[in-house]
Picture 1 (cartoon, rainbow, N blue to C red):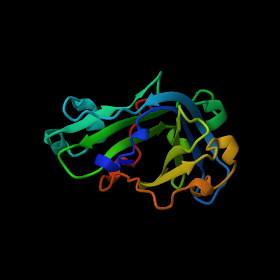
Picture 2: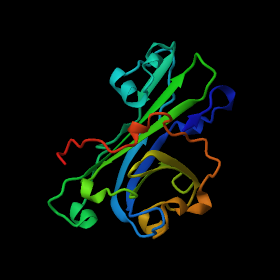
Picture 3: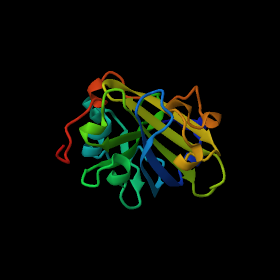
Picture 4: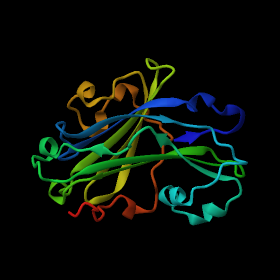
Length: 227
């Protein structure tokens, strides 16, 4: 999510948010019915960086930045967006997968990246991951993950939502952005295709960017849960 520098910067972005994160699993790109993986509520604070004093967390940088040369750039900043409590969500495997003995988990992380040395926007970077048994990940299955940020100081105002959809068997992603007062919860948006969720608030000209050129990033990975 690009953040402008200088006089054009909207400093209202730097505040505390109520964060809602959820995932849906669709059998295919044409289906409207979905399985709800989870809906997790937490809080987070996005802080404006101090380019002169903030230090780069090398582990964090390696998570979000695949170009290690960025570590040596002058005035590079990578600040973790801290969540109150765990950012991981418990997956109800009996309801979602129909198997109470299955293991599954979902994770989410975010960081603020900036560089005062170059004339480019700063970024808030989001990384979603979900770990499900391979039997639930047939080719063509779509996993849609969404995070909504609600400003604590203006809970009835416009919310920022970011979505990432991956299709099993196709190592790529689609990125979505919504801005408005619409309710993004699974219960409110109802049964609808993954790319038609809350069309009224969707920004079809979003400046959100996906990771390009590293298609292994979106491919299925070995699980650390043992399946």
